[in-house]
Image 1 (tube, rainbow, N blue to C red):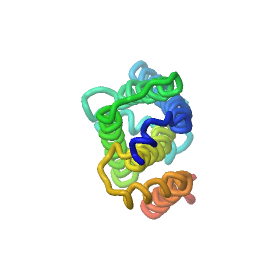
Image 2 (image 1 turned 60 degrees about the vertical axis):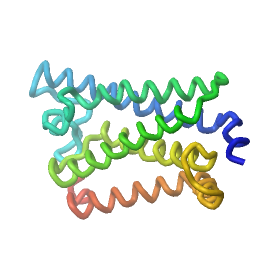
Image 3 (image 1 turned 180 degrees about the horizontal axis):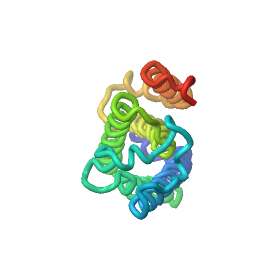
Image 4 (image 1 turned 30 degrees about the horizontal axis):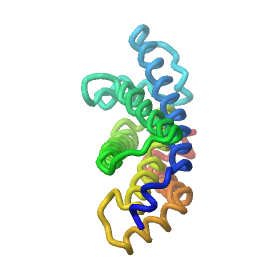
Length: 199
């Protein structure tokens, strides 16, 4: 069964990867432009600055904005370009080996781990929400879930028949699971940042 599913071209997944990749790439690009403006003029009014609560200047200037010694948005530009390319390749008829899908999942695991850390830093340390960052977070969550559940249900990741059935069922509920994740994020932000009263 997994072999049969794996041999089918996942066009739905491909379209999703392309769409999500374009959205997140645009956010990373906008964040990169804002970083350049901030370097040119530390007092510049950035496109992402809406209020004391919603803005990216604090994030861009903080150490958390350059975890590896360069702006985080550059990681986004590179990584989301790869995601878009993978989606386009699938539509073009490419068939990827199991190791490739596993590698993609490892990459998405790294991405969601960083996103969770960034969310924690924004809520508990920096006390500000970066709009372009939130777009990236909002995209990374469903992409991670989709890639992981797809890989489990077709057998690219280890798991018995029952695990694959659960993954296949959850795969069709990605939208709902993603909304639940968003709600959890909002509740945590509201409790710790009083978002509604500070907007």
